[in-house]
Length: 281
Image (cartoon, rainbow, N blue to C red; front, side, top):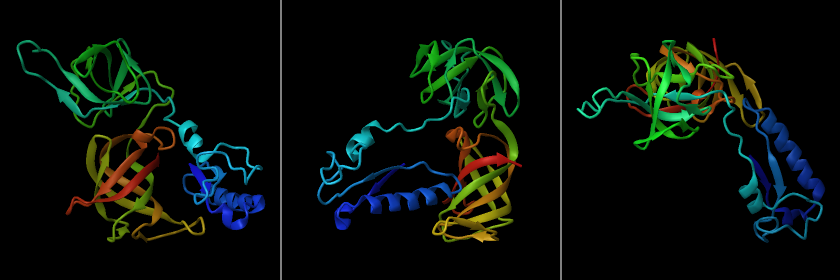
């Protein structure tokens, strides 16, 4: 995350003031439920200092101006945990030409995949070998993270939407569980309470979720947390959920697609919360 300390012209481009603000922001960011690494720089948007070109008013700052920083900053990607493909659609053409075609379509994350790779089907646990990869209807030998693909397997396995195909040999295996612990951002007026029921949408799986516990509420202003019985609009907290079916999860910090989810109101269909999954119970 970039921290642009603006209006430096109002403090005569004072270096000490800049470092004091950066220290306060860094301490606050480090106390968040998911600590954030800051990339700070001083700017004056009014005068253009350190926006496009390096500032002559702040020679003590040796970093890049904002535009250069935006163009060159390295955004951390998902750790190479091993290939994961959450099945979005099972492709069965039912035509004479492709009478035996059965492809499992989705977006590849976590690592690359190649013909001949051994995969596991979760949550079931069956294993098979990749014998075909299609991207945009064109056969491929390999696929890279971020690509939308369809893969074919050597074995006839009952696989449907919501299942996850993962590399059998992976640096980090996902967790299959129906009990999760997650940091939550609550986004509606209706409070979240212990014992309430919701729909959870995780990757391509949709299931029912029961709030078994609210562990804490995080106070953004003071960067502290306290016990809570409920969460209100814009509250941040940590919750424990029981899910009606097993989910294939990852820690959000290690693999975001496998660690992100939302809660939906059963009655209205409104998205009520964003979840960052931390662990299983």
